[in-house]
Length: 143
Image 1 (cartoon, helix red, strand yellow):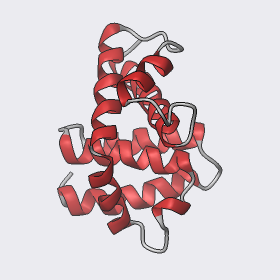
Image 2 (tube, helix red, strand yellow):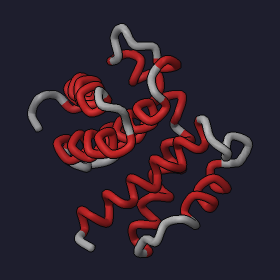
Image 3 (cartoon, rainbow, N blue to C red):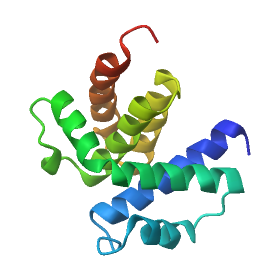
Image 4 (cartoon, rainbow, N blue to C red):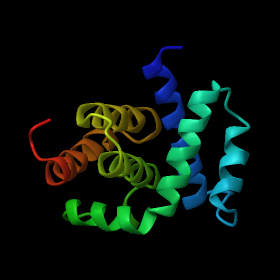
């Protein structure tokens, strides 16, 4: 599995953990317990497992800050009314834009791909539009 493929699978696992914490069976679990429960269903190389864990736990801890940032860039869309998958893809990508040096294009492409795979038909365009505005405000237009 390539480095990009490994990281993509890690993001898929992290997204599923975040979704389960948000609306699923893991609502009453700690983020660590939720990660362990979801990760048991993924066969990931150690590095991908560690990356997924770091993403899921970091996003879970930063959720309020990320939600506020998303609210600022999702005009006409209340966070609570967004599809749960879209909301958690946005949290994951917002975290990467804020706290990592992952290139902007990679963050947005990965998020759109997750939206294409796990969301509804309008999800990729919706996620792309919000992340484009969010990325411009966080990183400027230079990337």
